[in-house]
Every structure is written in C-alpha cells, then in structure tokens.
Image (cartoon, rainbow, N blue to C red; front, side):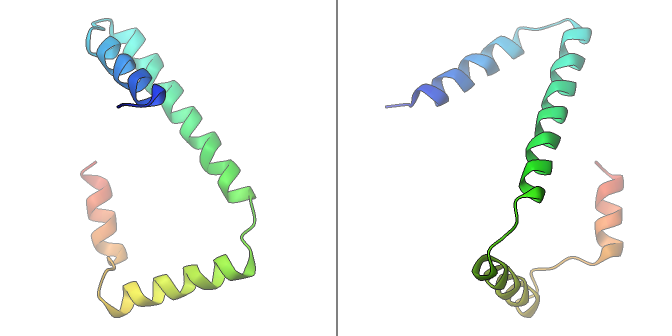
Length: 82
C-alpha cells in the first residue's frame, strides 16, 4: 500500500501534467529550485560528527581506488550539456 506522501506526490504529478500555462510551470520550477537550495544550504550548515566525516573520507578514498570518479574536464563537459 502506498504511503500518504507517495499518494500526494502522484497527485501533484497528475496535476502538473494537466498544466498548459507556461507562467505557472515557470513558477513551479522556480519554487522547486528555491526550496532545493534552502534544503541544501541547511544541510551545509549542519556540521558532521567526526565519525561521519571519517566515513565520508573513507568512502571517497574507496571511490577513487575503484575508479568511480570523474575528471573536472569531463564534469565541465557534462554540465554544458545540461
């Protein structure tokens, strides 16, 4: 059974698909960007514990060893295609 949040998200998607007004779509996009930015800023202000920080470093080191990385040049090229 779907949770209440999942049902609400599906309802929003259905409503969005029926919107044909470009202004409304632009406002929704703007709102989503603003809220995502607020969320990310809040996360950045929340300090990590020493244990979390060490785990993140270990994870990054493992990614590097396994080749799960991307060069800055390749990243710049990907960003330009967004």
